[in-house]
Amino acid sequence: MPRIRPLASEIRPEIMSTDWRICRSIFILALAVGGGPSAAQSSAAAEAAGLKPASPIVESDIEAGTAGTAPGDTSTAATSDRSVGEMQPVQYATPADATPPGGGAGQGANPAAAQPAAKKKPPPQPWKLLYFDNDFSYKQDPNHTPLWGENLKDIPLDDRDPFDFLPPGTRISTGGELRFREMDEGNRLRPGPPGRGDYQLWRWRHYVDLKVGESFRVYAEMIDASMDNNPLPTTGIDVNRWDVQNLFFDWRVAEWGDRPIWFRCGRQELSYGSQRLVSPLDWANTRRNFEGLKLFTKGDDWDFDLWFTRPVNTATPGDGPLPVFENHFDSPNMNHTFSGAWFTYKAVKEQTVDLYWLWDRDTQFLAQNYTGGDRHTLATRWLRNFPVASADAPARTWHGEVEGGYQCGNDFGKRVSAGFVVAGAGHTWNKVPWQPSFWIYDDYASGTSNLAGGTSNTFTQQYGLVHAYLGQIDNIARQNINDINGKFTVKPVKELSFQTQYHWFDLANTGDVLYTITGAPFGKPHTGRHVGDELDLVATYTVNPNFNVQMGYFWFWYGAVVENNSPRPTAEQLYLQTTLSY
Image 1 (cartoon, rainbow, N blue to C red):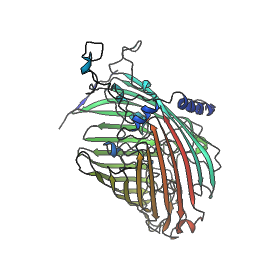
Image 2 (cartoon, rainbow, N blue to C red):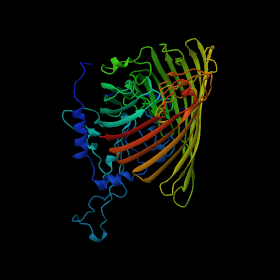
Image 3 (spheres, rainbow, N blue to C red):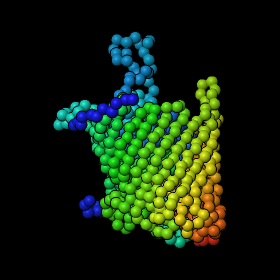
Image 4 (spheres, helix red, strand yellow):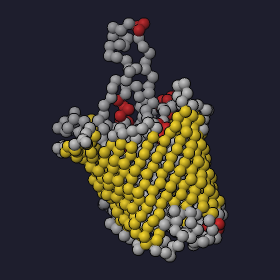
């Protein structure tokens, strides 16, 4: 067994009144003047294998050779399979096709033997779901295609006055994101009576990342999330003005064999596996975050995280109230803790296995039939690709995914015995034009047969990204639900993808109620089984890794459960979103 070797250590004020017009002007100016590579470079960048948009809707990491969500997914489950964000040394070998020193014309080289200039290589997507995981190491390749903002990443400090006293490898990065979304929605299951709203969501994030040598790091990220012209009740995921989203330090405290062990302390976002139970909720205008401690290690074959945190902002139901938190600095909820351990095994090619334990303890009673209390979740996930070999590359690929777990504990006096299971199978035609991909899923979360009894069988969805899996119109929670859905994706060109997904929703148990996207109970038990069906259409155009545009249209046709409790016309939602990463 490898020995653990300790390492020696190295070395809100008043709310701003700044008008968002300044940020909008920056956004427009960036596109018009400093928008990055030329059109030819943008086209080349979009041809990178596994290119992922910088928006919340991205291509699955499994297509790029890592294990994230389902292959071919362009839903808002923006997944990098793990989100540990530890520091890595910047080390690059000389590219094989780079021109060797002295080999150019006019330097004594034989003109007949002169090689043509190497074609610029498009970069991968360096902006990750969690910005503290961003990776701009591609810059070391002299043949890469430049991206706007890359010159502010990995700037060496140890060879510059007055910072030359710092350890070798010390570097600083800064950057961020500007996102705009136009929303037009009607008759969703949201707070208040049925209604229609046409409004705008703006989000600005900016970060500074200081890495001191290879053993210490400080990361800070701000967020300003605002909303204009909203006639509907504001929710906890809409507004968070001028606040601290991430602020932590990492310290390399030990080594296990040849792998470093890191300790993180402070405010931080969490994302694991498929994001079904733990996600930063990037679709939201605000993003979910936590405050606490984490111990983690990452390697080629396996990763492991252990954490103890408290939820921070109003993206977590029960935190608030919103009228206070939207214009004041966020603070952790001292009535609520979220802890866990997550192990990922990835040594087998084309396969990922997750084993995890989550402990969610909430001492604040929210409302009757609102699940909470003291809950433990023991779960696992298996994801596998089965390529069908051909002469040079897979002609097609079969996919399989299973995730499920058991939940136990105490829900304010009721014994908890609940669970969830997701099973899916898919197929991608790799060499067919447009590379069509099709998946079918059954997504189940248990419910209670008798709400007045002493046992709660209603699964609690924890801190997951429900939006990507249970309908993008955001009506349904992963609680007392059975969703049979199919998803079809095509890519006419590498820059453009279209996805359509259809859902059929039934209650898992008619003795329980329906739960909306936030986990809030809706209606009464024994009022029907069919909740409704939903159709989602999403198109994403990725100009280059800096910029993408996305449009979606969703319909939800309500069934007996809604019609017998709060009848309303068909729900619809249209949005147009632009995302600039810099």
